[in-house]
Length: 191
Image (cartoon, helix red, strand yellow):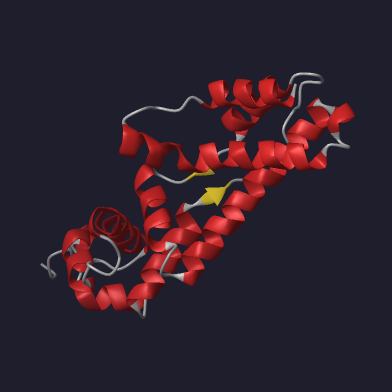
């Protein structure tokens, strides 16, 4: 008989890399990047510490990979605006905008943005994309308001802030923020 077959957790590969990122996400969200030793990531991922460094030469590379790979605004066709109905247009945007970032990843983004430029840049790009889509939806829904660009921009920025921050706000206050209710409020304010 040959040597025993290695257990799947001991075999390097995409599964090991994913486990490393899963472990880092959990640990960074819980205690923060700075407080998380690489050895703890390896332990939780059930991989040798050297394998962590095989995939990610420096600990910061783990954080950058998490942010780049697990916080995406996925490509979807532009929002279908409802002419004359800003609230329904924003509500559709909120439902159709697949902001792929777990609550843990959102905690990491906001916690680490102050000290890591790459995280801050990613958060800025995510925010910018949501603002762009919200402004576009409002311009299509309210074509007569295009001349009021400043108000549409404020409305789009407000809506983007709610979409990005809703888990953080819920964690801090215990209140769930309904994007549909925010869409109604913004539409009412736009008149």
